[in-house]
Image 1 (cartoon, rainbow, N blue to C red):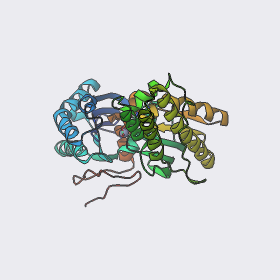
Image 2: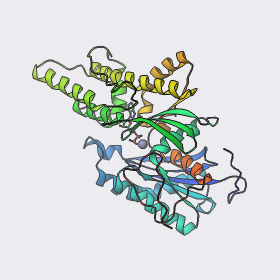
Image 3: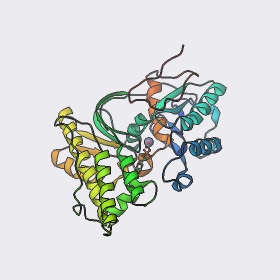
Image 4: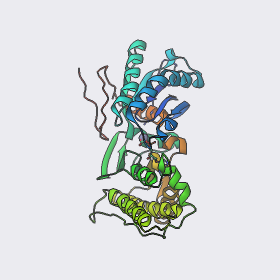
Length: 353
Ligand code: KG4
Ligand code: ZN
């Protein structure tokens, strides 16, 4: 897709993007959708750590406190003024409703005051688009495994904004399973990166946890059984008074997750006859997933791509990239845009006028 529209600045368009769906307040400025001029992320992890997970009310309050400052920092870092911004993109779902509302209200007020277009962005779509920033030559079609704290999808990306969801989780998202297992071992929050690190020192074959493949031809996932198996193992070891080697539990659990994810992703790629597989979402930061998939995919002739660590987890630059392509397609929102906590991938907002 080629950008042939002129913005306020002449040959290019400047996007301001805002992301507040969970526990990061983030704002970014992008030039022509794929060049990141700034990507400021203010994380609330420290505030939520003591509760072992994100507390929605705390998240909303922190977003309110931080959002203006984060936006100003993003503009300053990019060296642009508000008046130069051509349009504003904002995450409007899925996510925590109170948290989403902070970004949505801010973006609406700014779009109204500046009299510029507003674009509502699906957070999951944003994760996919992080790859367009990472690799400026990447073009659809490709197969995408989207794995985060709230979502696990295997999707065939036919074109910009055109998706076929081949499979999704029937219960826990992958990142959620990592976080819950880490919590059961009192390792801290968020659990994914901690388990990833510990697993490097553990034996992935020490404990046999179940691999859940579901029906033969299904691309769906299920991780709650695996999570329960880990919790049962921990309980029984404690009851027997036997020690728990956290490194081995982490490595064995991670291996059970990755074997299934990698197998289904490769089967999906074969079925769709694509040559590229792309990872997206926070769990795409997992080293076993990155390395394991790359190795197995190379043997079958697939190219594997994934965003850098900062672009894997929540950030506004990925939202800005998705906003830009939506804008080019005419998918702008009106000022009735609302937060949609359970927004689905591929679902467009309802226009009110
Ligand atoms: O995409 P993200 O920042 O937020 C959501 O949209 O959910 O993903 C956060 C999730 C958390 O569950 C976190 O534990 C997981 O991504 N995560 C990881 C790793 N880094 C982050 N999971 C496994 N391995 C990692 N290295
Ligand atoms: Zn996310």
